[in-house]
Each structure stands twice: as C-alpha cells, then as structure tokens.
Image (cartoon, rainbow, N blue to C red):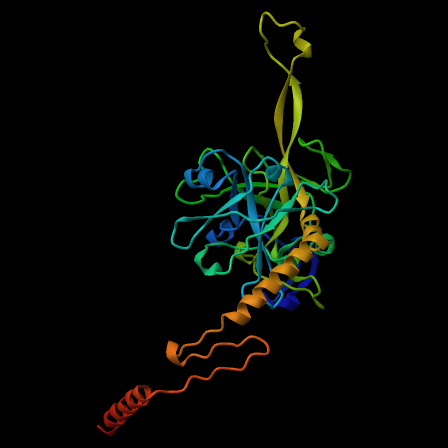
Length: 373
C-alpha cells in the first residue's frame, strides 16, 4: 500500500483508498493490531538492584528496591555520564548500593558517593552518578532524556492516554537472580493520567499516573515504559499522512515514569479472633488494588536539571578532563617517552645513547634486507 492511498489517520487506524483487482475504487478502515512486541534483552539490562551493603549485594540478601540507568551525553566524556535512578524512600531506608550485570555474565557492585533527591524535597525520586570510567565491562541500557522521556510536550504529541500499553522492569524478590540480576517484567495499561495529587504509602501527595499493573515490594524505583504505536509516533511533525505496515517491532518504547508503590484500600475482615475487643465490622484488612503509582518522567528531568545535580556533574567533568590531560597514551619505549613538565619547568628531552643508536641501526638493516629479498 502506498503512502498516497492513506487519506486519513485517526488514532491507530488508517482510512485507506485503493483500487481493487477489478478496477473498483474501495475505501476502508485499516486498524493496527494491538500487539505488544517482544522485550529485548538490551532493554532488560536497564534494571539495577539496590541493597544496603556490598556484602548483601554479593549474597543476594536483605531485599531493597529496584532502579534503572539514565545516560547524559554532553560531548565531554566518551559514553557520557551514567546515573542510577530509584525512589527516595528506598535511599532513606538505607539501600544505597547498586548491583548491575557485567558482560561476562557476573554481577558488578557499585557504591555511589552521593544520592541527590528532587529539589522540592517531596517527590519520591533520587539519582546518583555511578562514577565509572570503563563502561565497556558492564551489560546495561540507558534511557536518554532527549530521546526516551515522555515529557509534557511528547505526552500531547504522541497522544499518550488511558489504555496505552505499559510494562515495568524490576526486581521480583522471590526470584531475583543470585549470580546476576534477572529482571522481571510486569504488563498493564494507563488507567488514569496525572491530575490531582495521589496519596502514597509514604505519606506524600505525588503528581502521578495510575497504571493497571500490580506493583509489589521490590519493584519500587522500576522504570515504567509506554508503547507508542509507530503510526502514531511517526506522524508527529510529518507534512503529509504517514503509513507504515503494522509490525510491533516498529513501535516506540519510551519512559513513562518511575514506579513508587501501589494504591491500597481496606475491606472488612471475613473473620477475626474470638477474643477480639472490637466488633467484626471494625476490623479492616488492607490490600493492594493492583494500581501502580507512577511518577512522570518529567519529574526525573527536574532532578537532572537541578542546580545541585548540575554542580556535581560540572565537578565530575573537571575531574575527568584533568585526568584525561594527565594520562595521554605514549606508545614509545619508556626510555624514549617524554614527560609533561609542570608549568614553568623546562621540558626534558632524552638524549639517545650509543646503545640506542646501534640497536636502531641494526633494526633498520634487518628491515632493509627483508625488503630486498
């Protein structure tokens, strides 16, 4: 089907006009199938686990929370700056040690120096720079703010709303992985858009989505990803109707927000102890409603752009540039390498000895003889 045959787009449906084999002009609606594409192993590698200590992370004990990785590129450091993200309540409970996977199949344990909370001191989010130079030893995937965050503009442009498919990647503490992280994925859909603040278990009123997806202990801090059908995403900014043959692998998967807990409710108990000192109707049992509370990605962007986080990033940049200037690679033999003098000191140039001269001459003669043969 050609682009010219699509004459209208409404949501995920296309109004198509085409000519049948008999020459008859046909107009019909074509709807994308509502299918969730396979979650790649690369996407799963965005998940990290939080523990209270290095020993607990090594031995996979004392359940903490989940987290994920965000990358920021500024052209200074190859690979950019990588941040771990989780909930502030996870950090306040003492779970500050990060465990992630290595490319060799083992686990890596990092202990960030500083965790930075949201500027309003209420939003249940916290970030920390991993402070790692050699990123190539890790198996990880990062969300980039300028590419993957659903901010308030993209929320409108991509028509994100109630019913859109979502999934959450986090830590199922009953089977989280011992030798390495084994993230678990839970699926659902947006049930309510951000509006009035939502009360959480942590006595905070959050600007948040409600997502029909069961969040349980261990998933706090998990990334919640929304699926944007390709037809809906590609038409943004297009000068004419865009049509793509529907294929779930063409869909866009973007960061909707961060899970911070679930909405609870209470119900009357069916039975109670015989020696209870209050009537049955006053006994209430708290239960999980199955609605996850998801803090929007734009609240995470506010931390990244905060003066505190920016100052720390600038300090890291200066340290990195200082180390980079002092560790330039010199492949010459040690006796021939130049040292970088301090400011005001004369440069010391090594003088070749007779032994160096004779050795280099012999090497040149051998190379000449090989060439002549």
